[in-house]
Image (cartoon, rainbow, N blue to C red; front, side, top):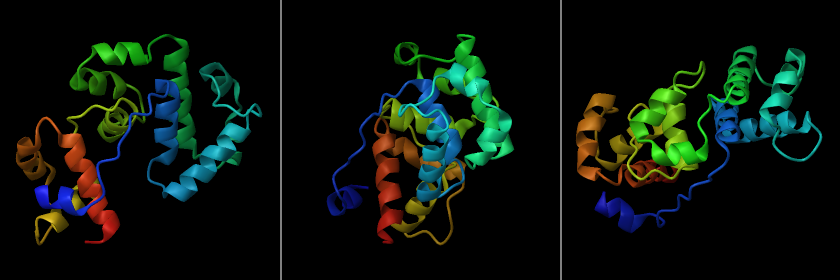
Length: 188
């Protein structure tokens, strides 16, 4: 890991601190899409509301199902986005203040109770939105591929192997994940 840090650009992850509703909806839209395609769909989604800002949960719930499809959002993703909106309106969605009082494990548990929000989405929320320093998304293909390249492995590590090895990086596993992603980006 030391060689990677010395060879690649300095660590550059800053917490976004977006409202959880906005962050999670963005994550759902980005799931399993290239960044460019997801950005286009997100732009279309925001344009549905016509006011140049991210919509409120109540506005999303009032949107007709066909409008999601017109923006390029699949039916399952539309269901997940609406579910997050329902949690927000009912007061069951974590706030940033509440997140600041909870452990990573507690946040993951609470977020993954919502349909469409799995462990990976919760981990990305912890890393990118909250700026939590010790998150290692062991199921993330990019992290696993980066480990394979950086450590000269013939095959992708199993998540459990990466979890064990990653204990060495505590309490900075978010930084380690960021560098493993950079290895893949660099094609090293």
